[in-house]
Image 1 (cartoon, rainbow, N blue to C red):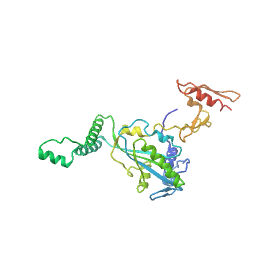
Image 2: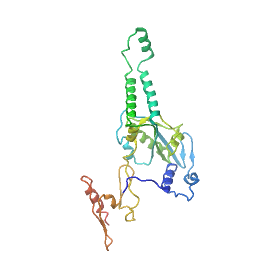
Image 3: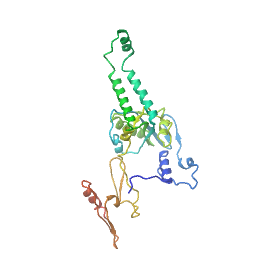
Length: 305
């Protein structure tokens, strides 16, 4: 089974519909691919400091500052929240020339901040170098210089990254409570985030596919830090149907957070399925060591009936 694949027209329209509506339904691609705005939109958007999409109150959070160090699965705790949300990460990639110009400007600004105006005047008057320097500015200038070196070696690229999390509910108090939980989780990883009010509509528009002008955040970050932030470790719910047997999944399981897990027989990696006259299915599981074979077998055994 492939881990990823291209979306067809219907799946693409269904995904776009899920971004601008709180209703979950499939959208069929029209025979003439025109006037998609009339097909996708089924709820009204009400603007203001606390916007609404249909009957649901929207609350959006934007990440403003980033920690000094990142690692893979940095925001994996968001996957354990027991309510739905939209986590959108938009990266406007810069080419090497533009990225070098931006990083060079940042390095010059921090390098110039190492000494105050009074320290520079004192050096001119006394012809002696100032001993005390702004160590924070010096360290950030060195950090920008290291980013330039990584960019020059083609190890990473730079991008303007806008990361937003949107929650919703028909009750505004519940929506505010969910946003507070998201904010607490993100701030626990040394991120700086802001609840959108005046910029709420722009922040929500910036989270939609294809919108590259709304809610652009600076300064740029490297693509390595971007990969550490993206939700690659999210729980996969599994296929909706067993294509081999043309049947529903074998059973549903509970996972961390609110994502249901759907198991079908071919997901057991190595398998053999036989169906006799008695219409009883049999399968054999072949997994690597430590892959919880006993757990899968004990779960399937009471589900036999």
